[in-house]
Amino acid sequence: MLMYARRLKGVSLSRIRKMFEVKGEDMINLGIGEPDFNIPEDSKKAIMDALEEGFTHYTPNKGILELREAIAEKLRVENNINRDPEDIIVTVGASEALYMCTQALIDKGDEVLIPDPGFLSYDACVKLAEGKPIPVPLEGKNFRMNPERVESLIGENTKAIILNSPSNPTGAVMEKDDTKAIAELAEEKNIIIISDEVYEKIIYEKKHYSPGQFTENAIIVNGFSKTYAMTGLRIGYLTAPTEIIEELLKIHQYNTACAPSISQAAALAALKGPQGAVDRMVAEFRRRRDLMFKRLNSMGIECNKPSGAFYMFPHVGDEIKFTNKALKAGVVVVPGSAFGPNGKNHIRFSYATSYEKIKKAMDRIEKIWM
Image (cartoon, rainbow, N blue to C red; front, side, top):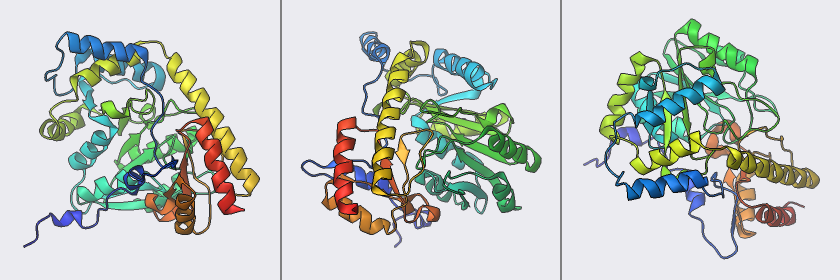
């Protein structure tokens, strides 16, 4: 007797999480995208206050109103997106938000355009909804999501397009004109955009533009894990047009009921408090990026300088051979093909670990490369 659902057949366990579990004495893990910073002091205090006050029970399904109001204000001021707090759902991380989107919107056989290379949850979530992921090869050294390529892949069964800027795994940041052009395509073809913007604040030379400022046909997914180093608190959010929110809420209601109460308190404090901790964290990520980029260049490893997030995606040739040699040298990396066919022969390095560990890891990489 078959003991599991057939739709799981095409879904693999995360190769990123597999690398997360690699242990070893003096092993340096460049495979995990998790900031090595503490949450903001205001958020720590908010958690302690919430515990003291007994704020440990269910909240409204959509999340506490004060947090949704703060998110609505952030979207208006920073992203030029006007959404009512009732059109915002606080989620158990951005991961739940992505899952909700595909479960609520995708029917069996529907096609969803996803970036290639792109975060591996996109492919898995579409398949779990019995949809068909259609990879959009990112172009050139800058890993561009080309609107003309996107348009060429839109067919009669296309239901949605997933965008991610800044990008995991490439660190690329979409240009305003490309974002606007894809938003206009979504309007013209009546396709929904699912925009993953969790790295929005971790950006260097460029500026973030959300498709939500150009079209109503957009679900904006964001969270607190990366910007405020709250990965373990599992707190994110999405916003969508009113007619979609109720359908998304059905998935959220029966999946998790509500996001954790104390995590919501921490998120509210993070949004309303001073942003100096974020600025300092981004400045340190920039310093680490510059170190890693300089070292890889000096080794002759072909690599684009990322404009956002905290990943580098160099071309190394045989990625499996490189991964195994790196592991033997004490450095954990993620093979590029984990992020799609177009990621083949690349490696994802995360510079979310300390400057000193990156220096040490680059020394080890240099020995196996040269």
